[in-house]
Amino acid sequence: MVTIYTGALCGYCAMAKRLLEDKGVAYQEIPVDLDVAQRADMERRSGRRTVPQIFIGEQHVGGYDDLAALDRAGRLDALLAGPDT
Image 1 (cartoon, rainbow, N blue to C red):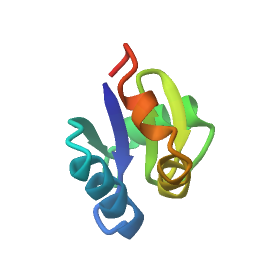
Image 2: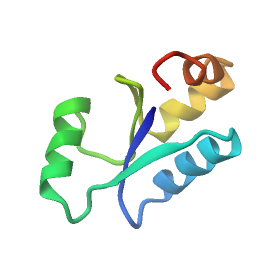
Image 3: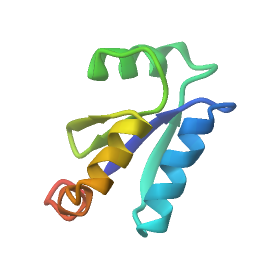
Image 4: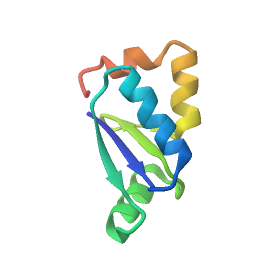
């Protein structure tokens, strides 16, 4: 399962979701703008405070730039095809 923590006005969040959608990948979106508990969970899991934060299974991928870099390197599809997605 792919999980993406997002913010409503976040352009990088929109780009990350579009990249995943273009690959036909379903994801669970967790908006954190108004939910203090979800934001705290995101920060605990990722160690970061910014959105988006993307997880493939339990593996923290990072933000949009990290996701796009994995895609450019040809490594994203293999992660998405793994047993945790």
